[in-house]
Image (cartoon, rainbow, N blue to C red):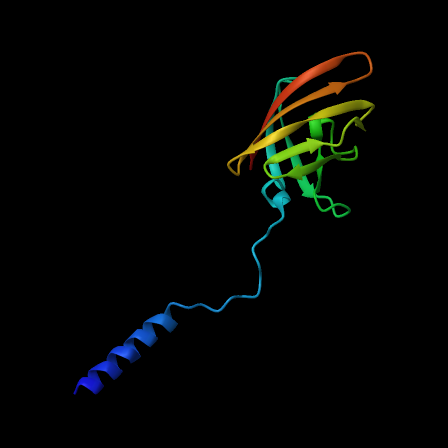
Length: 138
């Protein structure tokens, strides 16, 4: 009788162990820090004091690069601004020219998964502006 009880207990334990296991689907979690930054964002900025939208996408020519369409509200007809992601920080490629001759420098910090706080400069060649912006993920 003891052997039967031990066999039943062992069978139940094995059932519970195997029932808790799930087959993996073959994918691994994303280790790409850019994934937290990609997507559509609503922007509130101190320079233009307007709301506008930007889109951040992964730059396929760089492992850490992203492209920001409509950065500083310049419009979608211009090439996107380039930036690099490291952890929760996004940094504009230094001294790049966007739009119609605007030079930008600066960086932002991701808070949680839905807000980026930016501080950057933008210069049209005559005036250098200090800009703060808040991106909120749509």
